[in-house]
Image (cartoon, rainbow, N blue to C red):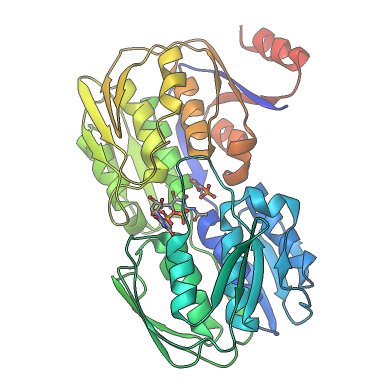
Length: 430
Ligand SMILES: CC(=O)N[C@H]1[C@@H](OP(=O)(O)OP(=O)(O)OC[C@H]2O[C@@H](n3ccc(=O)[nH]c3=O)[C@H](O)[C@@H]2O)O[C@H](CO)[C@@H](O)[C@@H]1O
Ligand SMILES: C=C(OP(=O)(O)O)C(=O)O
């Protein structure tokens, strides 16, 4: 099992290139099979979840040609199987996007119930409600979601909760339904807009993505396209908080600053200097930061995927902070690990109170999920001494060359897989 070993205590400084957005890319790869023509997708992040999705679509007959680490050609003409029960697909959340894509194109889909990070109960009732409203029969059979429709017909859907997954999934199916669909109370995240733009680039007629109402005029077929995925605002935000927590000075390159507004606002609140340019953002933290109040919300609110990263930073900031997690009930598990590093934290329900301490001390901790794992690495980089982070397979789901990028800005971190590697690292940094 691989681990990260980190020697903390030095400010991170320099520039880091941000890759394509994992959560946009996963949906776009699923949507790419909705045409029989060839689609070229660029700025793909080279992370495990993406490889699982590519294997899954190749497994049902799509031609997948990786041109390089970040570019792929996909042709969905050869798909002959609408049933996806591939072992790994169950482990990723975005497997559910194959339901919307296959249902839209073939009126039939069978996909294993989705996994993903264990950050809460994660129901999919809103996805199923949307598919049913479009005229599909949907059942759960032997661990699979089975959706079937004579015809998919445009409809009016009001979502009871704002869901990124349900918005994208139903939008994909509706893109090829007969007639007009109106979706209300939808998610407005940048990746929702990116998927709509991609579908439109293939000939779909989707308007309103990024607002509360999406209007879709169904089309009979979709055509070839070349598309570049938006930068990952969560990867960018993670490095911005790495700069803050280590009192460093880091510029994230290749970002869309508009997508980072909630993150920038919190960094400014706690005392960072933030400079925004056309496609980069510089974060400078030249003193001990101060406390704040955070509540996670759907976009444009503060993202739940950025909650652990600010949590770690606030554990080192002056004063008392509170974090309210309003999207996923299990997203505080990293706080127990952080307490092992000397943080002072009290959790009550969906709220955490953090008394900032002057120093954290390195410890052996375990990544409970993807973002929390990345946040614990930030804690290690800010802490005194050596930190070992176990279960980094979660981090590898969503961060490309994480340790290399951190090393590029001065982080002392190594990926290790044996006691011998650990001893070697300790010797090197002592
Ligand atoms: C692969 C992917 O893109 N994952 C992201 C996606 O997850 P995911 O698509 O699973 O998250 P949703 O936006 O759907 O979930 C938001 C809230 O709605 C609830 N809900 C959702 C669907 C449903 O049918 N019924 C229901 O009640 C969820 O329990 C949660 O409380 O958006 C989350 C919120 O930004 C991010 O944390 C995840 O990183
Ligand atoms: C929680 C995440 O991913 P998933 O929804 O795939 O578990 C994430 O990207 O932070």
